[in-house]
Image 1 (cartoon, rainbow, N blue to C red):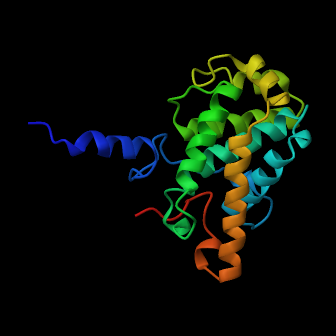
Image 2 (image 1 turned 30 degrees about the horizontal axis):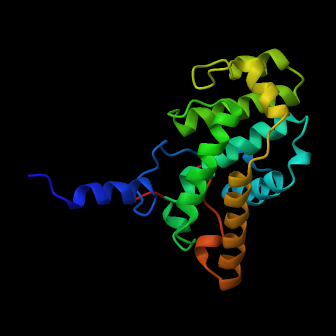
Amino acid sequence: MLNPRLPALALLLLAGCVAPDQPPQGYATLPNDAVVGAGDPTRAAIIGTAYAFATPTTLAGQPAAAARAVANFEYLATELPYGPRWRGFTGTTGPDFAAGLAELRPAIGIAPNAPAQPVVQALYTASRALNAGDQPAAERALSVPIFPAGGAATLRRLAALPPLPRVAAATARAAQELDRQDRLGSPRGGGGGGGGGGGGRT
């Protein structure tokens, strides 16, 4: 006989009230050039995405910068809700980033079931190519199945991002949580780590 509690549990999981053990899109890491120097890639991604999506005019007509911001958001959506280092963050972090990801991927043209790591890699590759003045290489980087619209169309979308209020809200709250942890002196909010190895998975 079917346990009558199972449907309710399923609804809770779908609502984000009960987080799975691992991100649905898989874990991701950031490349070595995600941050200049010896900085902390995750902290830099939190601060950078919060600024970028709070002031979208800085990304208008800048597909290279937009690609990095989107890649960083994809990474944060796997790291902050699931990385042990960030357990001090508020419990709304997971639902916030899940809602942001559901808004961001259709806007860019990222396949909804795409694993996060190849998305991050492709966007960073495209950003590097654009910064080097190699538009064809950037298009090739995004001409893979996880970007169904193709490279040229995806770059056009990156150059003209629509309003993304859920993305902006998620990144703003993450920045607030980072600041709160810093003020509390929490080791989870400061120090090295992140990026290359995330939160030290267990």
